[in-house]
Image (cartoon, rainbow, N blue to C red; front, side, top):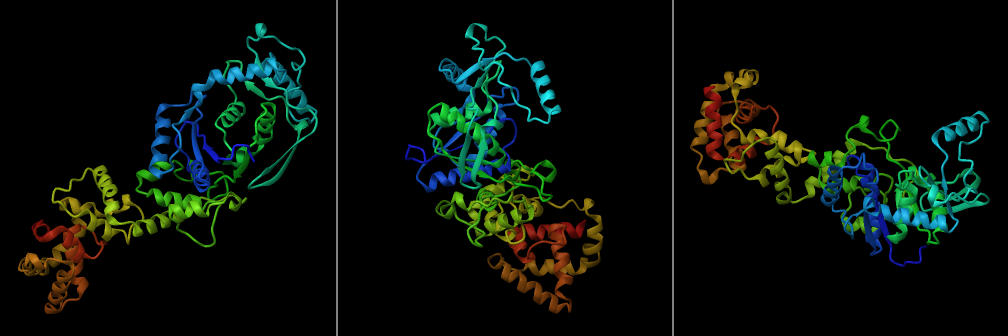
Length: 469
C-alpha cells in the first residue's frame, strides 16, 4: 500500500479518437473506488502522440465525462505540458548510472531481431550500449534506455488477477526517451503516477504485461508502488475485442441516441462486476457497494439488447420533467417546432412505456408536431380513411359537441365506445381510422391520450384534413 494514506485513482485516456465505451467503464471503476474511500480521482490526458492527438477528441472526452457525472477532482493534466520534466528525470537517471544512451540504429536492431528469431530466442535488445557510457555530447540520434535488473524476478499481486511473477530475463532494457526527445508510454505514465501520488491504478488487462516493467521504474525512482487492478477487456458478442464491427463503441453515440447517463453507468458497472442479482443501482449504491476484488476475471460481452432494456427501466423511473428537456433536444434535431405548445411531459410519459431511448420517443411521436401530408401516405389513406369517411364524419360531429372542459382521455374513450355501440361497430372499426386520421400510423399509444395531448382544436383539424384529402 502506498505511503500516502489518501486514495488517489486516475483515468488517462489518449485524445486520438472517440471515448471508447470500455474506457468509460475503466473511468467509472476508478471514480467509484475513489468516491467510496473519500479519495481523489485524477484525469490525465495522454497527448504525447502529437500527430494523432486532437483538441476535438480532448473536448469530447471532457464533455462526455461531464455528461456521465464522472467528475475529476482536478483540472485535466496534459502530458504534452510535461515533456521537459520527462527528459529532465531521464537524464538524471543517466547521471546516476540507472539509465544510458543507446545509439543502435534500426538496421542493427532489425538484424538482431531476425537473428534471435532464427535461433528461436525471444527478440529483445542485447544491451550492447549498456557499458559504453555514451556521453551527452554524442547523444544525437540516441535513445535513453533503463538499466533493467538482469537477475531475479518481479512479484506483484493484482487485485483482480492475483499473484504475478515475471523473470527479469524476460525483460530487456526499456527505452524511456525516444531519439526525438519524446517519452515512451511506460516511462511517462509511471512518472505521472508517482508525481500525482496515485495509490490505485485501475485499467484494462491489456496493460497487465506492462506492469512488471513499470514496477522496475518505481523501484529505480525510489517511489512507493501503487496497487494494480486490471479489468478484463470488454468483448463483442463473438468473443473478440469490442470494436466498430460490433456496433458503436463511442459513448458519445449513445448520448446522441437518447440513452440516459444513469443507464450508461448502470450498464457499464455490470460488465464484469455484480452485486447479487441486482440490476439497477443508484449512484450512491454504486459508490457504497463497489469493490475492486468483486471484478470478475472473465471478459464480459457487450449486449446491446440488455443495454436498451436497462435504459428503458431508467426512462420509466425518471420523472418526466427531467426527460422533457432531453426530448426537446431530439425534437429539435428532427427540425420540428412545438408551435401548438403541446405538453412535452405528457408526451414523454405516454411513450416511456413503449420506447427504449429518448431518440425513439422523438421518432415515434414526431407526427404530433407536423400536419400529415397525405400525398405521401396514399396507401394507408386508401386502406383506413377512404372506406370509413362516413364513420369518421359522424365521429367528428360528436367530438365537436364534446365540451372543452371534458376534453380528456377518459371522456374521449367513453365517447368513442358509445359511438361504436350506437353504430353497431366494433371498437377497432372506429379506433383504427381515428388513429390513422390523427397520425398516419397504425400503431400508436392509446388514441384517446393522443387526442388529449393534441387538444380539441388540433384533433378536429386533423380529422377534417384527413377527410378532405
